[in-house]
Length: 288
Image 1 (cartoon, rainbow, N blue to C red):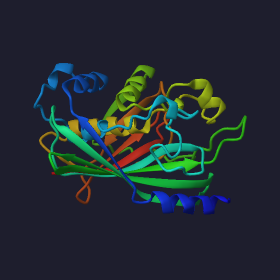
Image 2: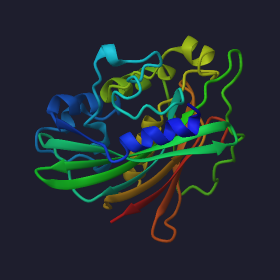
Image 3: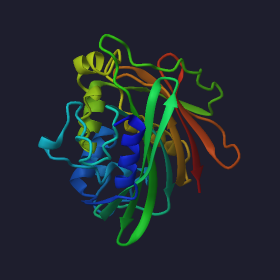
């Protein structure tokens, strides 16, 4: 079966499929999350209001150990569609936040497969999977998060994973913060989100199989750190929407720059510059 035929078969079977995950926004989990993000672990007692974007740290998938594949992800078809390409990376997200989440709330996450799109890119054949995650508390939707993941072809042994040449990050920041990315931070984030993808901790696998020069920073953590910084730099305002795109890999051990600009056309731009000043992620944020 050729690639296009295989993808069409996956689309017929998986588009519209929904998984429901029940979770609790427990004080014990909030202590771990707060500590990981360098907040006071005692600052989130039962009933405390969470930062608006922290909902994404809950409702994580929990595949059985016997269902984990050689790359550390659940085997194709266990949680996500069996797209016939071996490598998966986060690419972007579009988020609407319309409610609040508090410590102690019961949370329901509905994960729906809404897009499976094969494409021909500069780096070869890819397929973009789009998941729509809806988060509910006591029957009310508090956030809808559409997330894109890109599936890519395998890297030939002894070769490097193609990485775009990149563009310089903006230099007109209204605010900026430097952030070091030690192994311990990425490890703790992976533990909180139950993410065992080996490119985030196994250097030999990352170089030998995936073709990256170093352990790769988790894109979800990159976006979370940028959102944390943007919210800190918008006191008195509430984040209500995010449009984000990851543009270039960052590596564990690097020091990055989190930055944001002045409001433009109703949104606030924010971005991440890698250690060389190249654009690694960008966002358009809406505040109320």
